[in-house]
Image (spheres, rainbow, N blue to C red):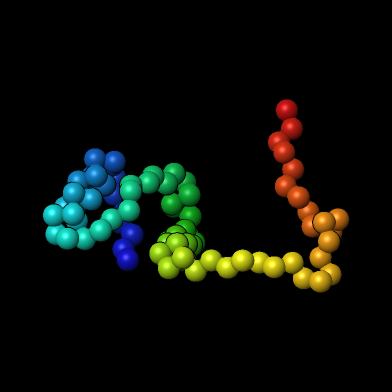
Length: 80
């Protein structure tokens, strides 16, 4: 699995075509805000995320015997 950093959407689309012509599969192109991409830890985070998504390494979390609905914080809807 590879992660490519390109400057334009056209470059990314052209890269996908090139990969297809050379028998490589690719994901759809997605853009990441430069401010996020420039964060020092972003590369490691993105690689970890892509590895998890590629293998589908997801698990179902079962509640423990001590969990009850009152002890679990629920997300709050935005106010306004």
